[in-house]
Image (cartoon, rainbow, N blue to C red; front, side, top):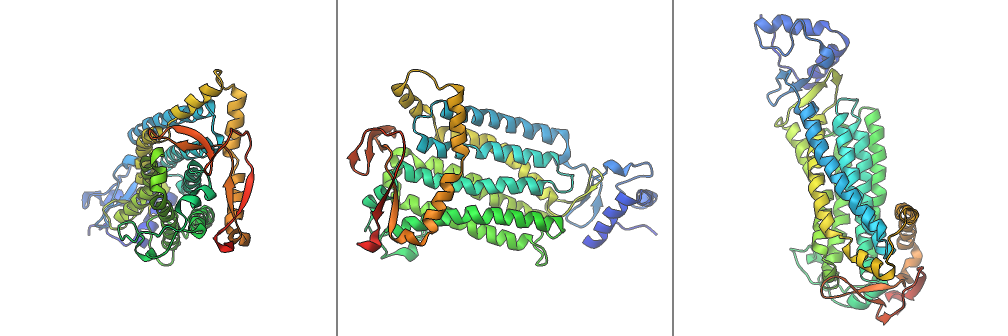
Amino acid sequence: MSIQLMMNSTGEKMLASTLITNSSAARVLGDASSQHSSPFSNSTDISNATLLRSGNTSITGDRLFLNTAAAQGLSGIFVWSALLLTCHQIYMHLRYYSIPNEQRYIIRILFIVPIYAFDSWLSLLFISNDQYYVYFDSVRDCYEAFVIYNFLSLSFEYLGGESAIMSEIRGKPIQSSCLYGTCCLGGISYSIGFLRFCKQATLQFCVIKPIMAVITIILQAFGKYHDGDFNVNGGFLYISIIYNFSVSLSLYSLFLFYFATSDLLRPFEPVLKFLTIKSVIFLSFWQGMLLAILERCGVIPEALLIDGHEVGAGTVAAGWQNFIICIEMFFAAIALRHAFTYNVYQEKKNEISGNNAPMQNISSGLKETMNPNDMVQDAIHNFSPAYQQYTQQSTQDVTAPSQNGRPGQHRTGHKTKRPKKNDRLVLITSDDEQ
């Protein structure tokens, strides 16, 4: 009687475990090969075996493309090309570090390419090693929250701070539009509370995402988390729901802010910046979700063994996600290179001094960029009960936009000011005290 290689998911997991712990399983499968096609023969060494489950729940021993030298080499070419492009751009911003309060946020945003690309490549290289990709991806996902916050902060800095923005939009009615997601905001006017909501919505993602990453790692350690496993008894479903709500709220607040200040931001060409960041963060999330669903539906084969190592559900989908991200980051690096050009700052630096910045100045600029103290202070400021009494304004020399999108006259609010070396904090009365 032929041995049928058709079994449920529990039986498949038992088979995978048996193949790892007892080589006799390979012989059993090999003995049946005369009556049914089997992935292994008597002489097969299961230490390098790959066991896949296709959509019809049949077991095959096909080679997994993601674990081949071709896949790792191809993805590596795109990753290192993206790293070279972005690291050069970061270096040029540090070299011409002429407007720190803008370039600090720009450099932080640019770091998303090296972190995403290299992290995804490492996850692909270690795809068969005890699901290390979950830990790598947790680091990558935490940084994306940081990027959303920095993009909003950069937009605030472009426009001169909260008070300068409020002087332009205060009291104006919010246009109701289903297309732009403001259909429920008709009849409401812009106020300082609107800006506070935008900041809080981005900052909440900076808090929730690391918490979700820690919970993911804990659940992974106890075998309760598998990518693409929507079982109510696992953690993937609930973490995905919370994460999706949080990132959607964060990006929605960015969109609302752009909707309110699009005319003011036009000289800074925000569309390419916004679309690039939104694509990297939001679309990559749904890309991963789609791949997880495809594996769950059997379109993408599920791996039980990769090179003799037992792996969990969702490993192949996560592998394809990492492989695609490695390629996408090369194009993201090109887009960000055009979106956040250093040419404007180079011209301003040359006006100040004809000499290039020494390495020690580049190093100090990098340290300032990586210091998250401003985000911590901003979170305290925006979530503090005292916020309803005061708003924050940066009184550094703010660059007024010109028609061609390059820096023009220095100003603070509506007054022309001489350049200052340091920033100071001014407290101005909010709407509630008027």
